[in-house]
Length: 180
Image (cartoon, rainbow, N blue to C red; front, side, top):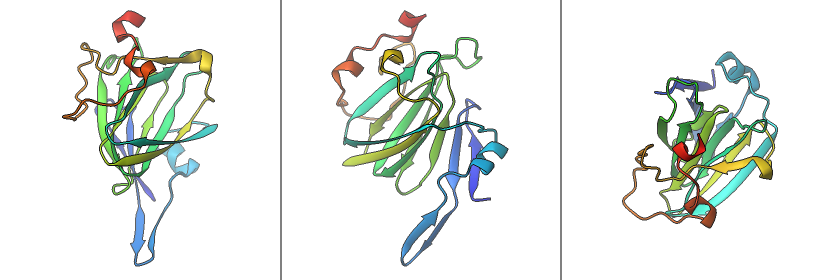
């Protein structure tokens, strides 16, 4: 199989490690194969691809879309290195309010599958980073929401020793408990 699917501490989050073929010319890998993903419990119809570029110390998030526009995401870092964070915001979930942090980079080529019902964010560790990610719903500005990245109740360890660079929008998101 061209992928290894690793269920994380919040089992609905899946770290995907593609099989990479390296040689003196470069590398080749499959980054998505619907049949393999479906066999491993990811039966999502991705409808939009996004590409973002950010500089070192930029933190984006924590973002999500409200019903009926929730998004599942398949995130990968094609240039540089990031810490990617997903927070479970499904009120009925036994892991509500918990998060997972993984390193995604151009070197490890790992991808993170984030199902609907999670807020997502990342912080850039390298000089710059580029992310490609698939979503299961198109962007809907009227459903665009966020949670404050430094929410004390979530107590996310972003793994950084610097003050991140944030958008005005991300500086002013409410805490999770304010959304309940």
